[in-house]
Amino acid sequence: MDTRDIIDCLDFTLLDHDASVDELVSFCSQANSVNPAAVCVFSEHLEIVRKHLNEGIALAVVAGGFPVGSSSPEEIEIAVRTAVESGADEVDVVLEPRESEDFPDENDLKKLIAMREAAGKAVLKVIIEAPLLAEREMRSVARMALAAGADFIKTCTGKRGSCSDEAADIFAYEIMRHELTFKEKRGVKLSGGIRTREDVERLTELVNARDDSIIASSRFRIGASSLLNELI
Image (spheres, rainbow, N blue to C red):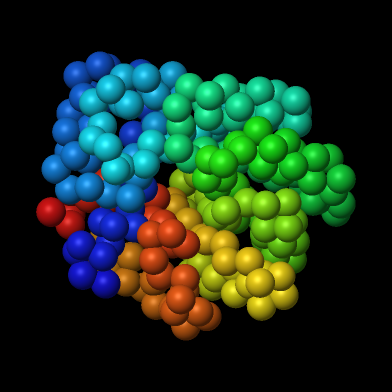
């Protein structure tokens, strides 16, 4: 991937509750200068970011708790619906993992259904927190999220571990499997500790090895806050 290809798939991120107006405006200015696929911020910053962001750049917000996801389907539904009604094009939501043999269970499915219904036509990216999960759990949650209607499955928040090669490979496989089984094209977002071009190239090769049709902004995103500085 060349620099333009990477930026076209980039979710440029500023997740800081204490970010000042000047910092948010500067963040938008940087995004406007390169046109990433999306910017990603906290819900409380949505209004000011929308005001300063160029048309054509999707505005994504995290909702329902971050980096720790809400345990309540009702709280998640309210948070996601509020974000979408306030103008979010995309919503990133954590499905909080649990240390339990029954994870994921019916209550986790309820959360996923609440996310999907509340998101409506907005793009829904479900954050799975792969660094906290074993392979079986990663696959189970990925399949449940895709079956519930997630547009993207996202590797992690980056706050409790980084995106591993294993997670990138597993998620790409599950996207491919879902398409073969249900004829639905879904996407993967790689996020967490991705800071260099070398990180992107290594992870992208793993996704390509599973299914090279995934690599497009409609189905492939890279979540990062500092990657853009290296690229430009």
